[in-house]
Amino acid sequence: MLLAGAVALVVVVIQIPSVYCGKARLIPSDRTKLDEWIAVNMKDYVERKAKQGNSSLDIKLAKAEDSVKIVKVRKDGTGDFNTVTDAVKSIPKGNTQRVVVWIGGGEYVEKITVDVSKPFLTFYGDKDDMPTIVFNGTAFQYGTLNSATVEIESDYFVAANIAFVNSAPMPDGKRVGAQAVAMRISGDKAAFHNCRIVYIFDNDIYIHTHMQNTSIISVAKGMGVITAQAREDVSDDSGFTFVHCNITGTGDTYLGRAWKECPRVVFAYTFMGTLINSQGWSNNMHKDRNETTVYYGEYKCKGPGASTKGRVNYAKTLSDEEAQPFLSMTYLHGNKWILPPPKL
Image (tube, rainbow, N blue to C red; front, side, top):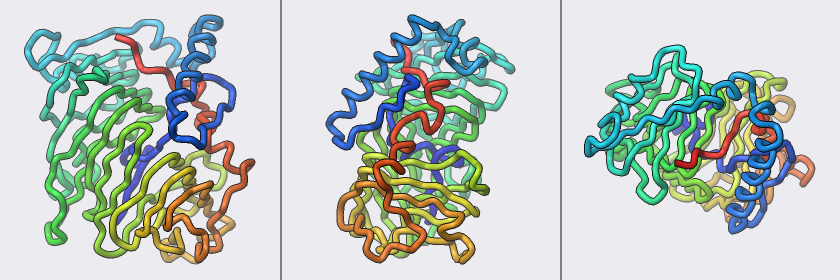
């Protein structure tokens, strides 16, 4: 079993709300204070924009945000388009402006691909009438990579108040190619605000995520793995951070396996159930992937699976100082490209 997150397959378990300023405002340890934390950061962004405009943003993004186009999708025919697919098709190749596809409530049974030539795209829904984009693609039909309900290959994608669902049936342990991805991101600098992503990956894991309330539920009967981060060099600045997550379910589950030479994964303020193997992490049967190459960190996690007794020797129990870089968006240079969702 494998769950690949972040840029590789799905940005589903990164539980860090967006930071909109250059200050390293740390995510609070108290989950109930997350909304307050987000509000403070949004205020910082608004104040910074009032003083500097878009000048502090990534140059390409700043230019795109100077001209915003809104396209409406409504199932009842009152919008510019009836389907999200048609709205995406209307965006010209080589697009250079922010295009907000405002999707009305309801269920849209579509399989959508946004190719690399269409950056600066936003999928926006009403948080009180959240639209659902759903399809039932599986690895047997499309291959794992292309089984996703929505595939984003372009840069600077934003989603707000959208449910992305793969409705393929749960694996029965016999069916070949049962993997069913809901969202695949291969573009750079993507952000999700208040989104739900529901999918199955590698037969044994069911994921239901919601901003500020992320659950990873394993249905494995044998061994399972939550992450397989693909950093190949210690100088690379990539990695996965999981904050305020809830990991439950069945099986003998590892927090991560060393798919490539130098993975970097951190879990903070996360509840870990009894399914977590006491070793915590796997070197993927590569003995050379150890404390000199692998960065596997845990910080103030709770639950029976969070006990560090029996952890592999290359796992790190992070100090406050070591954890700080992973508890703010400065880790991702987020003040240069992460923006609040639009207000429509």
